[in-house]
Image 1: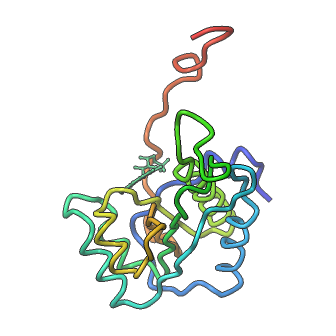
Image 2: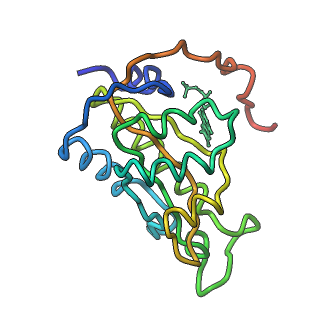
Length: 180
Ligand SMILES: Cc1cc2nc3c(=O)[nH]c(=O)nc-3n(C[C@H](O)[C@H](O)[C@H](O)COP(=O)(O)O)c2cc1C
């Protein structure tokens, strides 16, 4: 079993997928990783749409700009997971935002996305978090009701091509001690 840091460092955004299907067991494991993610006051604001239908994949692809490098991945991957969020839940108490940042749904969905991607990588599956698309168009295509938003689209499947890790800032470039 790989060391935990190997999983963290070895996960890459995968934009090319094999035609090979994934199993229901693999799918359930990545969904379980979302389930066990931390969230604001355990609000668990996520709603998840598992997309396998090529017609639906095509519709959400139409919500993506031509320049998005993951445009093909959406139709190529055997499964696309759409992470949606219930609004005014995370970061809210009695209907009121509790911090200056208001709704924390992006934060909670971000954590859940990373749980999903790391678990998929652990299972030798690839993912890419896709955020650049017309969210209203995707919302309509996925029949997401009012009060909820589509946040990300995450293709999931066996990688056919892995790219180099893009460079990272050095720890010394972003860590501050005692004050900024
Ligand atoms: C919030 C978020 C949105 C992203 N949106 C896109 C996207 O729309 N298209 C894409 O190809 N990659 C997208 N990515 C993937 C990033 O480009 C990628 O994580 C980054 O370049 C680092 O590469 P790595 O994931 O292989 O380490 C997104 C990543 C995050 C976290």
